Length: 93
Image 1 (cartoon, rainbow, N blue to C red):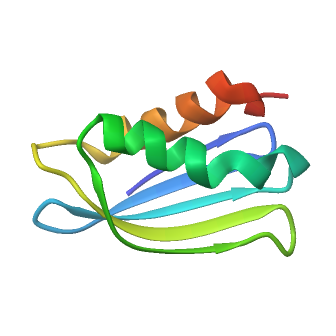
Image 2 (spheres, rainbow, N blue to C red):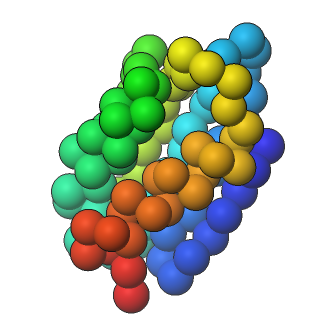
């Protein structure tokens, strides 16, 4: 499992079996309203598919998803991909 916290964001990625990972993203920031589209776009560019995803905007942004990779990938790469996507799209504080 890889966990990275930056400012008000936390990204956790945990291996769930062959080529599948559990992805959890939380942010108390109001800018989180666009995070779902940003994260999906960044992962799809790396040919990563969403198996399922749940999102809440009750308190900032919360997302739980199961994703599937098509090539060998480490959880730390996935974590950094998500953080970079958010920060590159105005989510840094």
